[in-house]
Image (cartoon, rainbow, N blue to C red; front, side):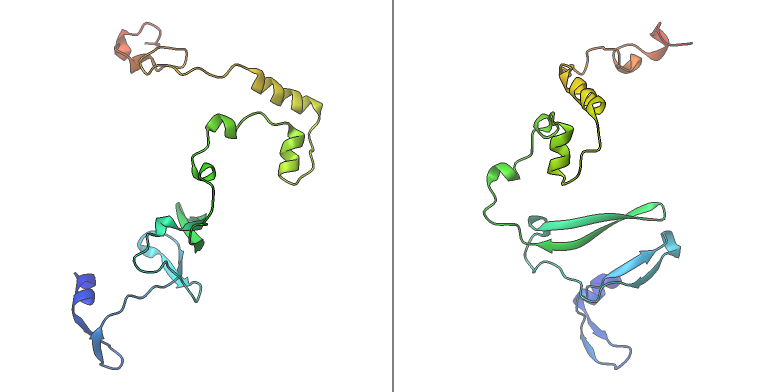
Length: 164
């Protein structure tokens, strides 16, 4: 294909007729639209990439998403080598229940640098939510009120609880 030819063969410049090995060029462009009708305009003037031989997934990435038509464009707006000296407990996945544990609305507002606009009724609702016993895991083949009736051994037409 054309890309392989550019990588392996000498290429002639259509403007000056010089013949040389093609160089890999990195461009930053902005896509407008979708599909074959998409148009591109010039992006930033100085795209960057990690040095050769470095795994980009070892870098800290600043990522944002943007709707483009019916698709989503992912943009890496900045990257840097990973921070040295970060303790291993900060790099380990967080326990979901610890991360989303009970915190008063005053604590939340303080941690976010905002003013708590909620009153005692909202705090009572948060307290009541966290006062409930945690949900217990259910075996994959156990039936409960949220089970899909035909998820087990029965077929839909055999289940007497389904409307016919």
